[in-house]
Amino acid sequence: MIRMLLAAGMALVVSLFGTKLVIEVLVRNRIGQPIRDDGPEGHATKAGTPTMGGVAIVASATFGYVVSDFYGGIYTRTGLLVMGAIIGGGLVGLMDDWIKVVRERNLGLNKRAKMIGLLTVAIGFAVLMTQFTSVRTEISFLTWQNIGLDLGRWLWVAWAVLVIVAMSNAVNLTDGLDGLAAGSGILSFGAYVIIAFWQFSNKDLTAADGESYYAVTHALDLAVVSAAMVGALIGFLWWNAAPAQIFMGDTGSLAMGVGLAALALATNTHLLLPIIGALFVVETVSVVLQVGRFQLTGKRFFRMAPIHHHFELGGWPETRVIIRFWLLHGMCVAFGVGLFYWDWTREAL
Image (cartoon, rainbow, N blue to C red):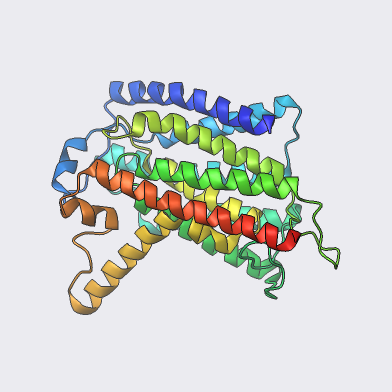
């Protein structure tokens, strides 16, 4: 427990002051975010706002995780791989952000280059997890092992790559309003603090066949990684809340998406991720529906996609959209954690 608090606390402090430093450096060098020409009208005033704030998120979370070990913890292969995946996603996003600001346009890496970067991170993580950890290769909703679908090593790798790429792009699409992705990320990573710590605390609970319901390798270290991300995002949100003084950019959104997916895979709660990451899923579905219907019929489902822009164009102030989306996402996260707890009571009894 103290390791988690130390990781979260140190990450928060470093993020709070580190983000301010990043803002000053970016403003001094006139490095700002280009804004889409077809976006909501009020967004034009955000042009030039410092971006690449995700650097502070990733660096702070990494610092919090590393420092937490000084309390007497032990770095684990699983924890290091998840933290490495977060850093890898952040580096892909950093390249994308850098191209945007250098070329002064809202297009960074082309789709192929970004996909290659994400695939490299995802494949590396998945292969190393199967090679150096005892990750389970069953598809699991909560902790049930009676689903009967064991993918085996290489199909699990393919599945893991799909989950990582999908979630990283989902968070990236959500990052369109001040603080929306950061606030939602705090809730989702907070859920994994609870889930991973619960798995660690109840790792000795076994079934009649001797199988552990919580056979998750290095669960405590995964809880520490999650806590570090929570602290880093809270510190960043201080500066990212509307009106934002800095944007996380793809550096932050891709790191967040990769991190959530990696935690779901490592804790064997793959199919619980769409509930814990509900807002990110809804935002992505809105884009898919919008593009699909327009290509088929020439008509649109929404005024603009992703769906947060639909409500903005409908007259909702930006802060109202953000807060209501946080609330809805928070309810989904609570439901997901509740399902996880219900599953424990079901098996414990």
